Amino acid sequence: MLVSLGIAAFFIQTEGNKKSTAGQIRVACVGDSITEGFEYPVDLSRLLGANYTVGNFGSGAATVSLSSGKPYMNQTEFQDAEQFQPNIVIIMLGTNDANPEVEQYNATFVDDYMKLVGGFQALASKPQVWVVKPPPIFHNGTGLSTEFFEANVILGIEQVAEQADLPIIDVYSAFANHSDYLWDGVHPNNKGSQLIAEEIYRAITSK
Image (cartoon, rainbow, N blue to C red; front, side, top):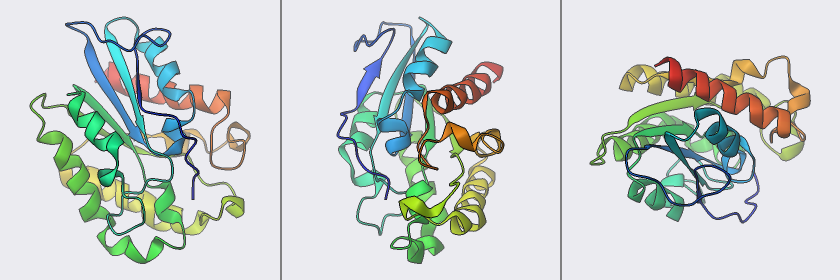
């Protein structure tokens, strides 16, 4: 599974300021270690500028599946994200659901993802929720299945977007010719983090 790097959820305004200012748009970045341990939320904060506060609520090794050993909805990061009362929620999960130990729960992937979406939609802040197709898995050295991810997880995310009428951010396709942007075939390097941030930035600002 994607390893947890032990980095606590944190809020990013500009250069690490942990307090949001009244009137700022609060953006919650929800995900696994691709979010938790890497720079894309920092890069996104810099792109969005001072009118936004970006919170990093990644949880390494977390899954969409509620039957796995580490469902995102059971983590403190999920509770922290709710308390953040975001105006925008960016969900980039599913990579760990391509682990052979979790694949058996794929039949409930869409339903479990819908519960996660519903949890955020029920917040008093009534956030706009975006679902993200994560970067590809370029090889199986991490123990994750490239084939299962492509055929099941990506398809499941598309189904969630359609079923819940949510906008989708296609980071998956953005990495198609950039395997070198993932240092181990899964986790982004600096260029990969920048690419993720740019895709999300364009989606948010164009909306």
